[in-house]
Structures are given as structure tokens and as C-alpha cells.
Amino acid sequence: MKELLKKLIEAKSTPDVGEADCANVLAEFFTSAGIKADVEIWDTNRANITARLKSTGQKPALIFLSHLDVVPASKRGWSSDAFEATEKDGKIFGRGSCDMKGGITAAAVAMTEIAKSDAELKGDLIFAATAGEETDSIGVKKLLESFDSALCGAIVTEPTDFDLITAHRGLLWLEIITKGKTAHGSMPHLGINAIESMRAFLNELENYNISADTNELLGKASMSVNKIKGGSATNVVPDSCRAQIDIRTLPQQNHSDIIEDIKNIFSRLEKQVPDFQAELKVIRDVSAMQTDSKCEFINSLKSILERDEIKAAPFTTDGPFLAELNIPVVIFGPGKGQLCHKPDEYIDIEDLQKGINLYKQIILHFLT
Ligand SMILES: [Zn+2]
Image 1 (cartoon, rainbow, N blue to C red):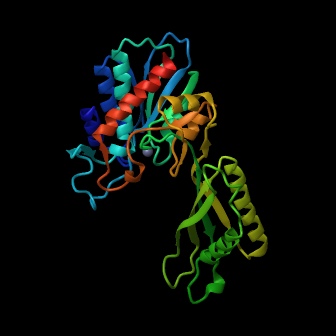
Image 2 (cartoon, rainbow, N blue to C red; image 1 turned 180 degrees about the horizontal axis):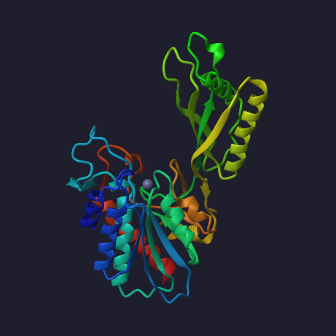
Image 3 (cartoon, rainbow, N blue to C red; image 1 turned 90 degrees about the vertical axis):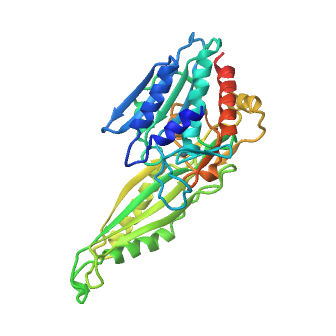
């Protein structure tokens, strides 16, 4: 267990490196346990891995979904090398230990232990670890392109500190680009100032009400302009300005409606502001997720795990892509969410073991 996690941390899988090495570590682990694993590699270094324990097929399958990629780690703040797994005080430190190579380890080890046991599976157990959850969710999209197994539900192994999470807001990241025409700064009337156009747009955006009705579990939708860039010199009228907007949505909100609303602002401004010209790019688009908290899958999990409460996550996951299969999706795994993406990220070894045990209980409940 510890060895697998350490190897996964050391198989650096930041966006610049890709997930292939990490997928190969898992493939070796499964193969040595007698389980066939499929690694799919594309663009030289991007990768997904899947493994499956076959059953009698009397019940639908259960899938554990993890992500292979981790966010980068700067040298600052780390007590030791972020990509050299360090064991200390009952913890394993390293980038990804918590988010979410700990969850990967727990699911993979649970699978091999079930395979070794005499449990007779009536439904297939599927392990999938995919690429790019932190950036473009490309891996889960690829996984689902050819996915045709009937599922009873899905467990996303993100670090929830063993809270049962059934919902999170969606995210829609947009880039707005206003266009202009350069001119000498002393003769602005000869140019079109793209920053002025951006100002006109942002003024209009301030009046746009993103919030839908408050969701009991998720609260409100939100919108924040978090990046802006335009111009090249004090004495040059800028011909381009870019702003990035982080929108967090509720399940009842349709992302294409929001995009349409913003394009309508452009149309309005084209009529009101001379030479206004803008375009919109979608940087990232992940739907909100909310699994019916009263469905059988959730009720069973609550009783197996002895949890009364279900919660919402402040972060997004690849869960909504699986929810498109019309199956209940739950986010549940070892590790403390507040350690994610931070220096000196770690997981308690005790939590890893607990994760394995709980995943095994879940597997046995739904698949035997
Ligand atoms: Zn994660």
C-alpha cells in the first residue's frame, strides 16, 4: 500500500509531464496482482488506465473513478522535494499524496484484495484513473466515449476525509477578448481602445445577475472577474484586451444559456458603443452535480458507512461526466480536502488503510 502510493507520487504527473508514467506504475501493480489493466496513451504522454474484475454479470457494475494528474508544486513552502515521497510521523508527504494518489492507492489495493479473496462477484468491479481532471477533463471524456457497461453507481475517490459528498457546483471559465486598433497614445482618436471596450463590457456585466435560486446544499451561484490583460505601452492605444471570468453554477443552470446571455451583452454594446468588438472563448466547462440524496445507492452507502449526513464539495470533480450516464455518483475518499494543492501535502497512513477497508465494504455490498 505505502509502496504503491510512494511510486505514484514519484511518477510525477503534472500537466507539463503528463500521466503516462503514473499509469504505467498502476499497470505494473495490477499485472503483478494478476489483474489485466489497459493503459491508453495519446499525445505521447497523456494517459488513462482501466482495470476490471469480471463477475457472473447478475448485477450491474460499480466503478471507482480517480484522476492521475496533480497540480504543479513550486519549491517554496515544501520541507522536502514534492516529488520524492517522504514518510514521517505516520504520514506520507508529496504532491498528490492527498489529491488524489491516496484515493487511487486505496481503490487499487481494495481491488487487488477483493481479487485475492474468495468473494464471488455478481457485478463487475471497474477501476478507472484518468488524465487531466485539474485542467481539461480530457481523460474522463475519452473514457466515456466507448463506455458501455451498465452501472449501479460510481465512487469518485477524491479526498473528502470520508464525508459522503453528493453535490458540487459547476464551473464555467470564460475569456472575453475585446478588439481595437492601435494608434499613437497622443492621438487616441485615430485608434480604437480595446481597454475602453472592455470597460464598457465589464460595466454591463456588473448588472448581469448570475444567481439562480439558492440551492439547499450548494448555496448560490457566483461570478468573479479574476484576470485581465491589455495594452503594450503607455503611449500605444491597445488593440486587444483579455479578461477571464470564473463562474460557478448550480445544477438548475444551463451553461449555454449563460454564454448566450453574455453574447447578448456584446450585441447590445455593438449598438451602443462605437466600434465595440468582442469575442468569447470557453476555457473550461464542467457541469454542476447533484445526486438524488434519497436514492437507493446513497441510502445503502449511508448505512454501510454509518453516515447520517451528506455534504457538498467546495471544489469540482470529474463526477458530472459520469452523472451524464444517469447513474448515482458519490465523491468519497481518504485525505483532508484542505491539504489539496498546498505545500507539504500529505495523507495519514491510517486513512489510507481505512480507505481500503471502506472501499472493500462498499464493493462487497453492491457486487456480491
Ligand atoms: Zn482531485
